[in-house]
Image (tube, rainbow, N blue to C red; front, side, top):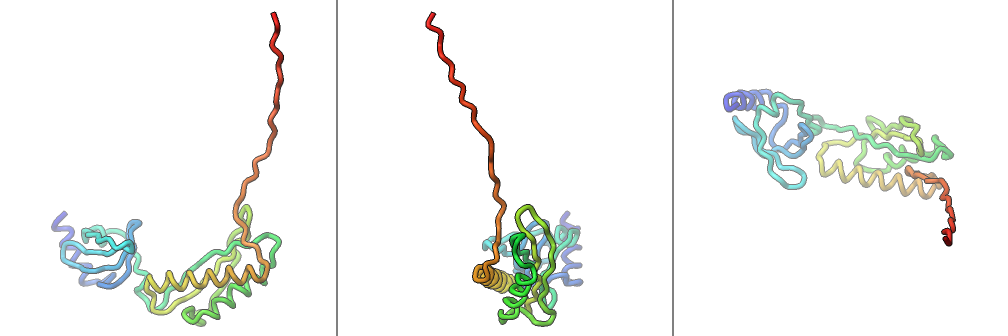
Length: 180
């Protein structure tokens, strides 16, 4: 294992699938790379924990590097009611993206109908941000989703949630005890 991690560290340093400062995701974990040694890499999670990862784990498994390129596409599914106007909701989703300074115009935001759920029609928004950083991505996404929700509220577009209704009846049987 020690030699394997050492060789993996050489490959990581040479091939640079990620660098110090990058935000990476691997095996259900995520964080910002703080240090890359020949044997291990140290990653600070977004909960401010340090994870020491053997380089063999990073070299031999899929590692996602969301900040490897200059732009990052984000997706979010907005659920609207079956009685709501899909075109109006789509226009609102695109307009709110255009209003946000940190969402790019090129590539242009887009919306696709992706789901016909139990209680909602799912419209998937696709937006692009420049110079992605996890803090910026989370903030921009939150501001954007909030703006769309408020615009839907103003337009009277419902964002339904799944609800269950239990029905049935209870039968009451009255018996009289014998006086014997």
